[in-house]
Length: 343
Image 1 (cartoon, rainbow, N blue to C red):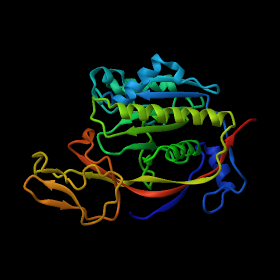
Image 2 (image 1 turned 120 degrees about the vertical axis):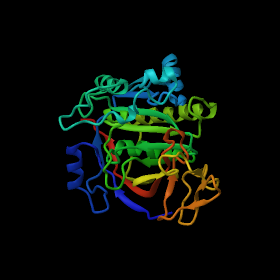
Image 3 (image 1 turned 45 degrees about the vertical axis):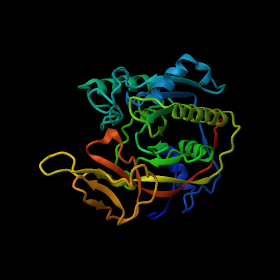
């Protein structure tokens, strides 16, 4: 569906990007061989960034009781409940979405806290960061749930991070149906303000469908298996066991103005309809002009009238009553080869 673009993926630091730019061909590949990256020494697994998404909450609590699941020879790993008060209340957040609280101002500071989540963001930044500094933890894995039929979604906020892109590609290779979702639109306009952005490397795992405030055994088991896969990947890279040659991987990029809004009655009169049955539970399936997307309460059907897209987060409960789904576009990303820097 839609067009397929090919993008170069580069290393995250300014120095490494400059090095890659000077030695790369027009297709984004490196002429001078693999790029050397430092070992990942500190990993933090976060659950409860949204307090009613229980797969991450329960997996973090389980690992806290059974720390041998985190043990690897080449790095230390810790677990953390991001939004403790929201977890206690089993709500998404208390005052505002914690996963939108980590945008730095021009002086490199977070917003002055005026509510619980902003205060928690400062605490997490002090504990895991500070964001954008050498002191920040090396990798954050943030666990989430969705009520939509997104399946296994790997969320990447920085496609210039080749380590994370190789990690995401490993999951796609090993986990049937896993897909990579790129938060940044094609113009890169969105601020990187999620909790994972504190770290040098940032990846999130979204699993669904699961009703918020509930827990499904199959999704818990999937999260456990995928996190173990991630930790094994980090350990193999650190020990120089894994070879990571340049490669391509398919991903789905969030479009600019991605949200498609629910139909509403005039003058804030509430919902006028909801997602059409033909679209419901069809995340990742191509959507073309003329296909039904909404069914109004009076029986009228609203059809999609834009260019081909791939819809995700269809009828996600957390986005009511505004966003019915998000549009994304498939791309093929080129990831440069990386190796462990042993110097």
